[in-house]
Amino acid sequence: MNINKIEKYDWYEDYIVHWRPTNMCNYDCSYCDPSNHHAIDKRKLPNVEDLIAAAKKIRDSVPADKSVLVYITGGEPFLIKDVHKWFNWMGENNIRVGIFTNGSLPLKIYDMSKESFKNINIKISFHPEFAEIDRVVDFVNMIKENNGKVEIRAMMAAGLFHKVDELEEKLLNTPIVRLPVFPLYNKTTQEVNPTYSSSRFLEGYKQKMDEGQLGYYTKDELDILENLEQDEPTYLNCTVNNDIKTNAVNFVTERTNKFKGWTCGIVNKKILIEANGNVKYGTCAATGIIGNIFKDDLNLFDKQYTTCQREVCTTLDEIMVTKFKV
Image (cartoon, rainbow, N blue to C red):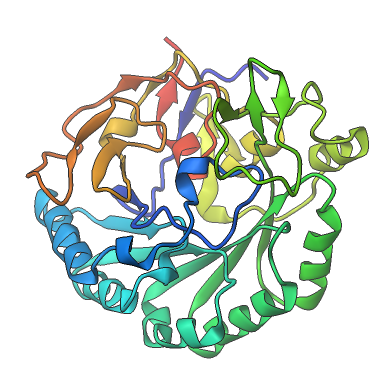
């Protein structure tokens, strides 16, 4: 099918904020961008009061009748001291909160935030190179016991599909979405960073889709990915060509998430806040840095469209943002 337009008519929020409050992580996944998983230095973790003040700027910068979703990624956000205070402030001030975590920390760390679970949606990113399956299962049970909502996004790393299957066997009634990874690729040397290799200090590597040309996935693995049968989350439903229903997950699994040159409405839908406070439109950074949430007064979502410059759109909610071929 020739796709020339994507639209979502039932957005769950008016505006989306993708916030990376820290770029430190206890994982060092082979396919993760090196800028997102620095080694842990507790002295450089953000102060929760600064995060609350920045969240207030966002709430004050959009019309009172507009809804805002802040979903928090990293790095690993639960490394931040008293992070639950930030979650609670946003929940009390009409900001919906979602958190992406690798679910790997000791349960006593999560226990400090358990009172917040009822106010937030927790999405566990299962990274099979590092994840301890039983620890993830224990965390899922803790979330459910504290009236929280949880979903798992399992990264289908080459050679490790069996670990995702094992996780699924140990979890009951917990949604798992399987997603192919975009391995790090060096265009100059034509090398892929293989499974279990560090990516923390790589230079010249960018995430790239493997459709069989990179040699990251085997033919059998590609066949599995191309024939996945899974229930996609309904909140990721969208429409193509005005009237054909689909789901953002399908664009990733079918390798059709390529929109370079298209007109895109990311500048009127979503911002990215980096660990240093720099603000950009989308994880694609469509228009570059537009200011700093800790230092500047910002006018957000004041444009309609921009032009996609990325080879691949890798973030599910950004796939659904209004876009069309010109």
